[in-house]
Figure (cartoon, helix red, strand yellow):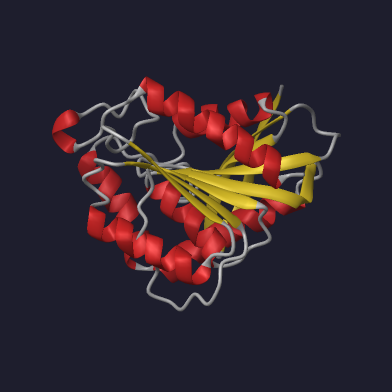
Length: 235
């Protein structure tokens, strides 16, 4: 497996993505990974390597820049909230990462997908909402609220994987997301895992009092659904 860190810019902000591929010579479809609220951590990088095991180039973006990683709830919130509060700033940062991924010599620029976890799920969905040239996006226990700017249509395929008891996405927010997809998305799916809450894919995010509980069953099922979705999207 070929691994490297690559730097890219959003204005004056330096960002450092982690890339995993079979080698640096063969062009392959790429899967962009949008990290959770802590930053471009080991989970995001390990997911990039999992994408390589599936046959793709895996790229874990650095949305906060300079590989900043929060170490507690307060730091994570401080890193994430400026992007939640300014979704145009967020999509600008995401587009900078996406454009750099397209420029990599070992990436098939016409076959790129995006996935994300928690905050990263919102990021992946916003990439679809902005109609970047993506084959599809997958949100794992993502925040689902629509941005405050106008979205007329959504062309990339969408798969949203949701914990039905997720305290961070209640039924009102879920219904708003469904209505948004029904109105604007061309090809979308929503799967809710019963008796499952937030962060169900991450063993390190296990805090029942905060509403985050790892579920080996939901994690396994969701990654199988991801594998099928990517296989379909890249054909």
